[in-house]
Image (cartoon, rainbow, N blue to C red; front, side, top):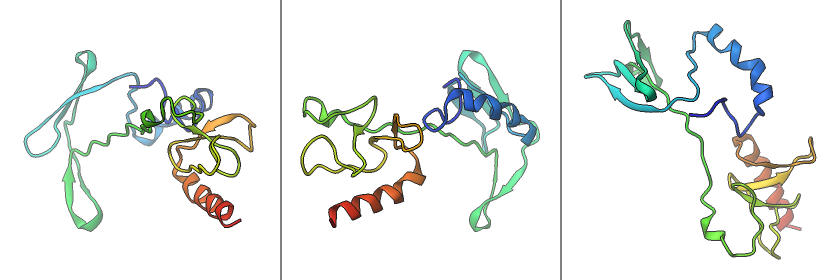
Length: 152
């Protein structure tokens, strides 16, 4: 439904160079659109999109997935995540647009409150700006940093 892909990971101007390459890899990219319905009897034959648009699978190929199972009409939804931080409303813990703001020691603005994972905002060592921590690649380094900080 967004006007870019992976908006929480890359700025839109960075994606402007990548988006034209996607169709070259036989991938149909449809932005600013919502999926309303999937139709089909034994597999997805048609996707009904917002504003009356649709995608029909004329020649559906069989795809072998892990475990050797064969499937047809594969549709992948990538909808992202948004941490639920409503519990923190009026708590005094400093929050950003969708996460808890932390320092380089994984500490929130309260003594002995440490945070890591998808629900954080941290100061980037690259840009020196506060950014979201919603990347799987950040999970292990965050956990290691938190462990080291807690161990002294």
